[in-house]
Image (cartoon, rainbow, N blue to C red; front, side, top):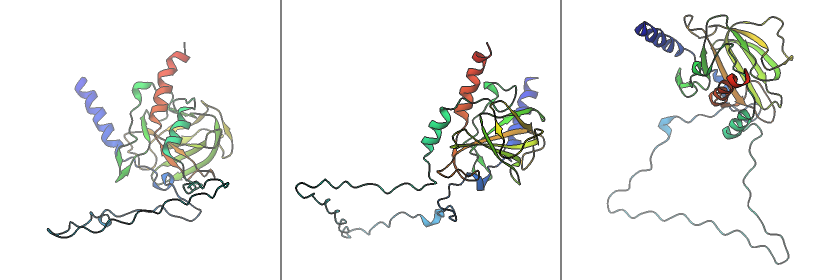
Length: 249
């Protein structure tokens, strides 16, 4: 029996490798028409080593000192350029997510059912989400209060749902749904624990490994469901799972 259980777990893990990230929806893009820049590996080269006996090049000239303020005038303080409006540091997203009181998104799951797959490779890129294995048709619940902003069908994610948190700073992404809950519509307000759909294997998920692909993004100053900085949801969901038995007492 133990050998059969290990075999089933291994097959499920292999099946999850087909679950890729949603590439367009995890890119941070500055400006309305900008595209994320990539640098080919071949373009990054180490500086050439000078031949033996060659004279070392002159050191670059030192930066001139900052101008002194005239007597009676305020001092001049150098400032860093402002951060782009759409940029959001990952640490900021981590702190925002840690402050939310989340619910586990798959009904009946406990702490031991969670696995941190955020940093795993998927299709040549990072997963940037966690996969929660469950039987097909298991209810999927809203993890937080907030607005349902988009019901979307994509090639990798299948039936997906995007929800904003109450402050419109975080986006919650639910993917591979088998079907939506009856009555869902864009713009409606969701409460923590509301039924939003059912676990499935739509999109690029393997048919023999139904699961919920769950991701979180930190949005920029102008909240847009397709833009954001990925945030690992595992620590927040693990805390929620650890607290759940205490709340049920």
